[in-house]
Image (cartoon, rainbow, N blue to C red; front, top):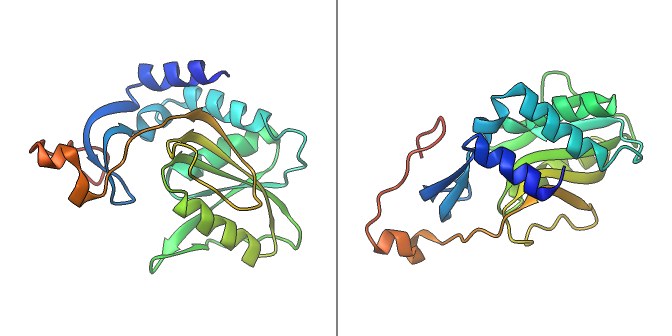
Length: 191
């Protein structure tokens, strides 16, 4: 899929939204990508994950790993497209970890998938979990990189289906707050 096709699919499913949002990182933004507006459609999820997998079909991936929650769906569908196992990390007492009996063998080649990346903090945590369990983080595949190219995972290469250069602001510097614009409710947390 081309970036234009990915963006068209996200717009069609109302995943790309405009307003005044508080992001998971705590930053404010006039734009938000509500991943579940697209991920609730299995045929779209399958199409996107096949595109994510295509970039790594020759990388000898053994396992696809994604962080809970959206990363579970992406890991499953990307793993299906690659013919591999799919597992996920989750937070326990604020720390990213494997649970539910998930483990890696020494040297297991892992593709890490994520839905929307702004700062890359969660992906960095997943990379550390993979390494701590003996795995090799071969690459990171993102649905949307909205970091403006700032997300960096050291020696782990990354690919995104869609790149968005979206402004983000510290709350105390947010021009939307200064204009008195109310926060736009979104997602299950209502942030």
